[in-house]
Length: 181
Image (tube, rainbow, N blue to C red; front, side, top):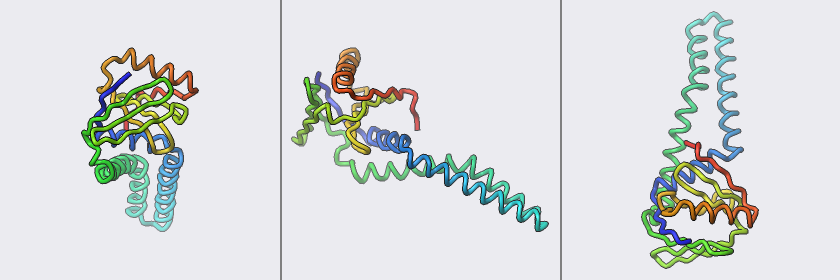
């Protein structure tokens, strides 16, 4: 099966955001930071209350509540903007470069318009992740072959190829079609 793939800034950003959203260390660090900061503000609030400063106690309590509710949204927005900047700085020369991706019997062969060629044995893939608009063929922690679904002209044939590759090479197939950043 042969595909013509052209990746945009959005495709690379989706990849980065998906990887970080599934990173357990990152998620634990976010939760830890959220709870420790909230507990800190609650303790400060209790101390101010005990010292008779209702205004400072209320302010600290509101900060604790804000940290649990508003800060996660800000953190998400901030991370997206930082990763967008990273993607632009790192991958901008690859934006909208058409690449030919061929699924052979035992490997994927990719060639871009610049002339760069890659041959990746299926045995090197850790997982195949299906997102709402992409397939990610995960090689390692941060490396993936990104296939936008819009590039797939025959979805039944593609699904058949993916199913065969996944079963023949014991590659985990992860259906994350409900994932969103």
